[in-house]
Length: 118
Image (cartoon, rainbow, N blue to C red):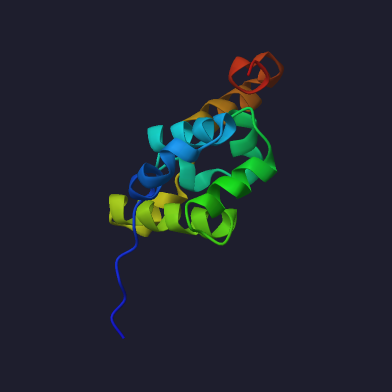
């Protein structure tokens, strides 16, 4: 059986863009602005960053034709793998993680604005 290539995120968002709620639009904006970092976002983190809810994130994924958030995230991981062309680069932490590690080591994690200031 020939496996059909999966549609990318932008290709799934485009046909439903006019039907997205304000919360779903914020989710789409975040995912489309950072598609390869999006593979690392859990549903709760995406909801927090988009100032929406977990339920809105799940509804967004379903509106794009996924069975739920987990299937959408797996698709984002697959897209990121293709982008990086090597799966081992996916093990690298997002850029903010290194800042946090430095702050923790220096004992200044309580003054961080990137985490608590959002």
